[in-house]
Amino acid sequence: MRTLRHVHIPAGLALVLALAAAGCGRAEDQGAGAVLPDPVGRWAVESLTTGGRTLHAPEAARLDFGENQVKGNYGCNGFTATASFAGTSAVTVTPGASTTMACADMEFETAFAKLFTGRLTIDRGPDRLTLKTADGSTIAMTSAPATPDAPLTAVEWTVQSLISGTSVSSLPAGAAGTARFTIAADLSVSGTLGCNRFSAQVTRDGDRLTFGPLTTTRMACDGPAGEVEAKLTELFASGPLVSGIEGRRLTLTAADGKGLIAEAPSDVE
Image (cartoon, rainbow, N blue to C red):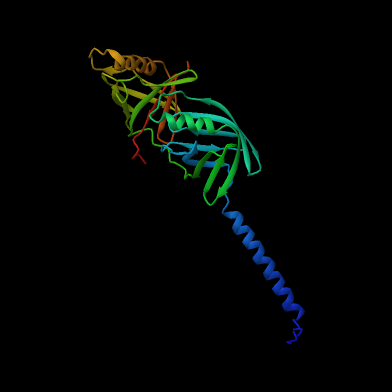
């Protein structure tokens, strides 16, 4: 039978080995923790799994988690909510306000809104986050790089919807894509109101844009395009409009709560 011999390790060497082992342990722990993201931040929604089906998300679907609030987009309509985190393992969501546009992929929008409420457990992975409902439905997300905002000028903005107070409605059938405008570097603006072409000069004071008198063509405009034209003409003549750009989306809002939402082309950088 073999006899194990005691090997004497000098005290100094033992201390060095102990410190090295402890250091390796901490590095592994830190490395493991570093790959698990904090839920607070911007996330791009990839897909929903619910009722045995997987629904793939539109490009615009996202969640921006703050410490106790959420801003997001269902894919077309924007929304807000409050969020109460239980560490990094769960979050309780209370929906707030949302826009009410008629959108191309309403199946996804409706499913997303239904899932993103109440208590959701959180699974974290490298650059990924999955929210899970009590019945096992999931919202799969990936960390989203900060999307640069489109520039105000030298971009053709296409009006997508009209704002009236707290409600937002998409353009009526037959008028989608008919209203477009471009603001040049010298703040001259030109485009179409939905039927007639127009031009004007804009003055800028911080985030406030004031349109000067519109010069337009004189075609008679009926139907949905004419309705949109009348509303935009009234909006541009109403005084200073507060502007805001988020990604490829521009909002112009008047003091009475009326306004528009326009979108830049997808290839704008």
